[in-house]
Every structure is written in structure tokens, then in C-alpha cells.
Amino acid sequence: METYYNPADLEKFGNMGEEAAELWEKFMSYYETVFKDGALSAREKSLIALAVAHAVQCPYCIDSYTQGSLEKGANQAQMTEAIHVAAAIRGGASLVHGVQMKNVVKKLGF
Amino acid sequence: MNSTAEQLQCLGDIGIIPFAEKIKETDFYPLISNDTIKTMQVNVGKVCNLTCKHCHVQAGPHRTESMSRATMGQCLEVVANNKIPTLDITGGAPELNSNLSWMISEARQIGCHVIVRTNLTVFESEHCFCKPEFYAEHKVELIASLPYYTEKDTDRQRGPGVFRDSIKGLKILNELGYGQKDGLLIINLVYNPGGAFLPPAQPSIEADYHRELTNKYGVCFNNVYTITNVPVGRFLQFLTNSGNLKGYLSRLAGSFNSSTVGKVMCRDQISVDWDGQLYDCDFNQALGLKCSPGHISEFSLDAFKERKIALGNHCYACTAGQGSSCGGATI
Image 1: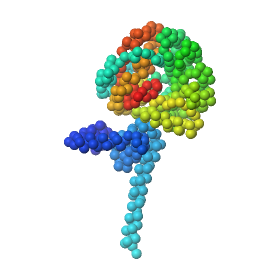
Image 2: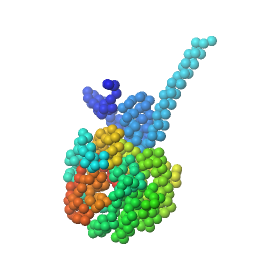
Image 3: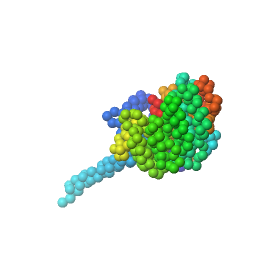
Image 4: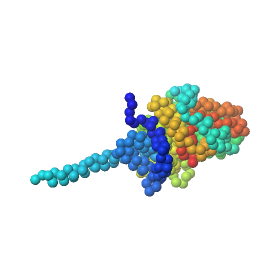
């Protein structure tokens, strides 16, 4: 069965450099710099990326940053907590919009 | 997948650039020895009290191969005659060879630095022939496998209860003076990835080990070595069964780092199997890739240094990322 997402497509990411080489090179240069050890360690950045990958629900990124986090020495407990951070922010983002609902109710009601 | 032929075939048919071709891009083709052989690594047997999932030797309690005292004597003669400074003893669990303490005593008498690769859990076995006190008395450097600093991850790789027993073993060694800052008795731990992925940066994971093991268990040690899992033996079987073989080999090949090639361990060591057969390294040993001269009884340093080192796709494990050797990362 055909699917929109294919694990093998991850290896074709570099094809995005076709037609827009300069933009691609700038993006990759920026990308590589972002993930280097800095004020945050490479491991912390990898765990943030893993959490964000779940928030944006990108299967390619989940695949990459699960392996990447393991290769930075993270364990499953740390990775699971990172995903809970994403879940908390996503859930909280929905819940905090309840204030909008309350505002509307207040405006419309007696 | 017990046969070496099956393993080699499995590693060969994987759709990556063969390592023997890849190395031609570097200044180290053909790969030969350094001028100085620094280490004789001796595998004194495949018997072990554990059956770790990443073990390239496929060691375990069911194995029977064990080096005889006569073969050990031949190894010691080569060490003495060629002034090889370090004897690195591995297995299996070396302590389950009844001749181990004799070999260590003899090696120390000729001034050789001795390393034993211990699993930390064997000391309480009734068949353990070499106790921590003996190691301390003979100033043996220990390298101990402890794949991760948590119980769950270590036990998943090495078997239930292994982490607790390892901590117990470490505490005994600490009481004897191992792992202290004075550096008189050295114990280094080994991190192995818990599956089909590369190890983290060595200094980073070493800091984690120090923090976690000291804070939670009150144990100390000197260094942590990260060793890449080599797709041989039981680990190769895992890769095949789990559908990870192609992905892992591609990961290793894709992480090829040409600056590690000059520092691969096979360039300055001799590897001897339990029966005296010579190899370039413990992994070539597990794959049956013999070298010439073939047996310790006919060893010649000049001939050994002139040999071409046998290469295969498993060699990508020693040249990926930060490099890997029995002494950890190489760059």
C-alpha cells in the first residue's frame, strides 16, 4: 500500500538543494551550527529537537532525533520526558485557549 | 548465525562501498602495522558467566574453549623476546580460565603492563580463578564493561541483575584502591550502545557516568571508554533478526572518518585466540580472518609487521565518527 510517508525518503532530503542550491546551503550551514555544542549541549539540543518533532508530528524528524538522542548518550527516560514537555505545551496551548471561550461566553451571556 | 562464513557473507552483501575500497581514499592503503607493536591482546577463552547481546565473541556459559598454560607460555615468550610492553587479556570472562593468575604473575615478572577485561560480575562465581585482591597485588589495570549508568539499560543488554552485581564488584575494587584519584590502581569502564546506533562523545558520557555512579551508588573509577558495537557475532545476529543490518552498516559507512584510519588498533597490536592462532584484532578473530604468520609458535615480529591487515565491512565500526578501539574513541 502506498503511503505519503516513506522512511527511505529521509535519505532524499538533500534533493531539496535542487533548484535552490544557495538557499539549501544557507539552510544546512545554519542547521549544522544550531546543533553544535554551545550554551546548550548537543544532547540538550537533540532532546529539544525530539520534543519539537513530536509537537510538529514529523515522522522523519522523530526517526532522526530518536537515533540522534541515543547517539548523544540520552536514555529512554530522558527522551520520554522530553516528549511529555511537547505534550504539555500542546495540551496547555489548547487549554489556555479556553480563556477565549470564557471571554466569548461572558460577552454573549447575561 | 554461528559460522564465520555466514557472517562474512552477511556483511558482504549489504549494498555499501566495501571498506577495502573506501580505505583507498586515504593514505593508509594497504593497511599495515606501525613500526612498534605496543600490545598483545590475548583471548584466553570464550567461557563466560554472561551472554551479552552485543558480544562479538558469542561467549557464554555453554562455551568450552579455554587457553592452555602451554599456549600462554608461548604468548609470554613472544612478549618477552619482542619487548611488547602491554599484555591485554580478554575473553569470555578471563577469570574463568584456571591459568589466568599464572599468566599474570609471569607477565608481571618480566615487567609487562597487564590489562584484564573483566565483567565485574564474575568474582562471586565458584569457578572464578582470579579475585580482585590478586589484581590489586599485581597492579593489573582493569577494563570493565558497563554499557550504561542505569540499571534498566545495562540489564537489557547484559542480563537481569548484572548492573547490581557490577556495582557490587566496583565497590570491592574501590575498597582495594581501584579507581581512586592517585591513579595507582586503574579501572576504566566501557560504554557500549544499547543497540544499532553509534556511541556518544566519550567526554560527554564519561561525565554522566561519574555524576550518576558517584551520586547514586558511591562508586568511583578512572575513565569511560566508548566502544562502537561491531557487527560481528551475537550483535550481527541481532541486527539481522531485527531488520537493522542495512541501516546500521549504512550508518557506520556514512560516518566514515578518514582521520581515524591511521589510529586503528590493529596497527599496533597482535591478537591471539585461545588456541594460539594469530589475528589482526579480536573482531577478525571472531570472523576467522587469520593472518600470517598464523600461529603464536611461529611468530616473527618482522613478518608480522609486513603483513597486510585483513579488512571487511565490519572495519567501518572502528572508523566511524570519533573512531573506536579497545581503548575507546581514537580521536
